[in-house]
Amino acid sequence: MVSLGKNPHAKNGSQEMQSFASRNPRRAARLAKPRTLPEIPPQKACRDSGSLGPAPGSSSGKSRREVTWEPKVQAASANCSFRRIILVLLMAFCALFTRLLSASRPQKNGDSALAGIAHTIIFWATPEDALRLGAASAAANCLAGSPGATRLGHIRRLQNEIRLETIETGPEHFRYDSFLRSSWSAQEGVMKKSIGDNMIPRGWSFEQGLELVKKAGYDGIELWLGEVPWFQMNTTDTQVTELRRKVENAGLVVSNVSTGLHWKTPLSARDPKVRAEAIRIVERELETAQLLGCDAILVVTGLVTQEVPYNEVYQRCLDAMQQLTPVAAKARVKIGCENCNSEQRFLLTPREFWTFLNEVDSPFVGIHLDVGNIHDTGFAEQWIEMHGPRITRIHLKDVMKKRGRCCDTVYTSLFIGDNDWPAIRAALTKVRYDGWLIAEMEARYRYAQDQQFYDTAADMDRLISAKL
Image (tube, rainbow, N blue to C red; front, top):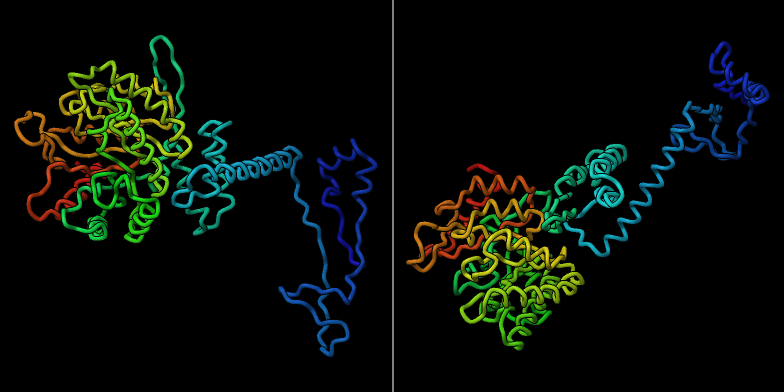
């Protein structure tokens, strides 16, 4: 018989054992007895440095090594064990719940299970607790260089996705939770660069344009419905899917879908047939966004004219957005209402726009913020600070505020005009924006048009790095 020795609890002179024995004399006596087990039968395999011993009846002269089993008993409190069990059950439940959520939320850039767990438990834990639990799990269970360890940074960056904003509505206040899906589209929590396909020089093919965009250093491309020959209202789903394949083959992604069709077919038109056509344009944007794998579109909400006054435009645009909200929610794509300010004579101030979005009251309707369009109605940095969590995408261009409207356009390339770019960059940091920045250069180079792509990408890099 092989002796296992005395139980670790039975140590002579041990204060703990004496206390234990006084409370449980019978159990203490039983634990003090040595335990024995029968020797391992010769026909059973034994471990000898990871290999099996010789089989019974083998001609090998080597004898089996004598194996001694010693129990490895660790002193741990019942409370500690109970906590471990609860933690394991909690993590298992969170992982299962995350898997269920993944069916309805796009998993961009390989969101890890650990990041999903931390993201999920936000529903019943504070952000700090979620971050702490997720990080502890990653540190305890992920080997260096493993996918889980690589995604540890995602967990720490969850703080940038948790936006809690207090919104004032007259005398009332409410808390508004916003988890920007755009932040999942931007890999590693860093702002990404994109440029519109309507910037591709005339006469170039879509493939040539994609190659230029990639070489210039952009991460994605904005597709303009109705403004380029390869992307029209009558473009079929199959052709849209082919566009996506070409974009991805070029090493890019589609940042968003935009359109200028609403300038001629506004959502605020008095004619019901025109409004129905405008609604159909938005619906097609949502459909193509799904096919292209992006989660945001641009919409020009309404146009105030001498014939169609502000109040009419406001109510019709509000009705249109509320009609489109269920469609956007089903598609899991956000509608970004662009601030065209003076051009559309509508929602001229950040407060007006903020009130409009409050009345729409949907997480799938936000603002596609254009920092150039604000030029004579305010300051871009103030718009960013007020609308932070509701910003779906940002259009970048500069503006010559002091030039007036004597020329074709007041818009120009970055850093040439009158925008306060250090203040804009500080505002982006303040609201923790980490979504897409999209170049919209209305003033085109007359010569060497491809060079404008490189110059603009370099300017955007300086903005992102805050080296201004």
